[in-house]
Image: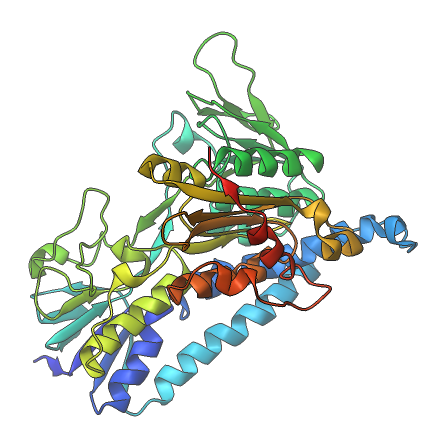
Length: 458
């Protein structure tokens, strides 16, 4: 006999708990299924723990630079037990808060276990059979383990298992030169590890513009991180000192010998054990659930939110998925995924913040555009803080005067970029912000100046 509910939500990431709150407020009954850790990737193995550790690494980095500020700090050491204790206290508060709020919701029944479809309206969780006309999948993703030669013959780490490591690696070799690899690489370098980043592409963070990639590489190498690009044939083998990671397939190969190896080459959606075929739900070739502009799958009543739908791999996009679904179902407000402007940050130090189109994408359109750039060495706030690495770049459409996109790499840029983003959402001309008066001394005060110096993109 199945248990009847108005809705079933699978996965307690960023979208699901908020959705449960809105549905139950509307008078619906909800079955909530979580197989392991409440809070999803962000709370448990993503944003919250990594950014807490980034903060600890930043503190160590600044302490080592104390003499530059006239501060004598003495030798700097890192106690990973304390780093982990601080991190875990922060994440446990969030995890416990999510679970407690769900369990206290009288219209929400929590089930712990793996949910799998029996039909388009029923799911099994252990011995329980749950039935509902609406099912919302918020199952997230996990680190991809690529089929590289030798990868299963060596002990490797992912972002999840690295967080559990209680010691500082002697030499951390990172396979993957994008966001996760770079954040962990700089973090552990500041904790005291020797770090090598191996990337198969010709540059780091290859989805960004070349000037951004070059600046990121310069910053990392400035801290003593070795970067190996154009690694066309990555392979691994056991070594007496840990793991040997080769980058070429010929006799000229000069492998990197690491005490530990981190795989940071992408994410895989957690859709493999949902029994989607029994419900007739379509997935793409990578396993992501196919959804339309309002996050509906091909099966009426079934929705996919968050990382598992391939529409965004961020906490903020997952939460926006919740907003889109509830706006359509409960508020009569036809919101869409396509209304969203691309925005994200890479939390190396200094952070990289990105919105809209890259310069490369703007050039590909062939439309006339304007570009403005400014090095962080010409931002007084950055100089005062002693953190003047990076630069700002913004692109504007000549005809409409609308902001097309921006890349800000520098101290405080993860916050400063939101002024530009808000103008884009307002569909207003760039003069809205270029004529604004910002507070001095801040990083944001140079955004109007940046826009006042626009030149034709040649």
